[in-house]
Image (cartoon, rainbow, N blue to C red):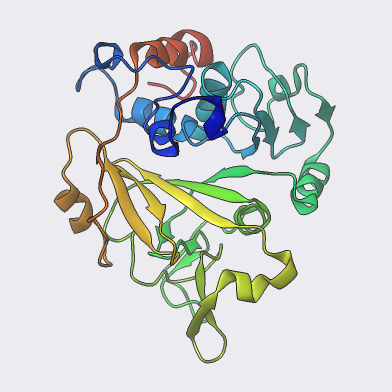
Length: 291
């Protein structure tokens, strides 16, 4: 959104104060009138800019992109991993492989083609998850414990996480907030953040230095069930807003690293009644992902 388009700033946009959402406080749902998943979906939708090409996976990302297209980003294009581009399904798909993803799609092909779109550099934003993350945005979805021997627990693996994170201009991670997940050092780097250890010295170097001409961007935000995090000019995570019902001290206590809470702007704007109505009446009336 260009500054000349309105009097709203990027901070207003992140808080949901944009041209398409009424910001009268009376229109915001009160604490207890919405579920945590509602707030996660709304917070994720607010990360979508109008005109973005968005790479989305199954679950919350589907709720987010569908809601964004109905509110703040009507011209955003959605790419689903299984092969559909710019579909506008009547009903919410149950997964990225659901045939409904291809309804009114510009392209209905396959996984190789949509990853080719990623490689071409057309994807502006990707939604991903992870088991562990550190303050530089390095994410682990591979294994817990010392990798190279017998890890304590095998995870799902990359599943495209590394490729999607590497080739998108911005990445938003949606994760559960736990001390064991927000770590000083992740056990294995599946998807590189802003600073990565260089082998064999282990000294951290910038992602831009490692990727060279292939550099596209990196993690732009992390949305947990306790708050919204961004990355500063040095590529370090900081807490931006705290979800209703939590304090910034509680969020920091649920991080293993020294989280910067000095830049907290207040509470995450709750869903508006309009957003809740859209989520439950238009986006997911069947309750596929919403309880």
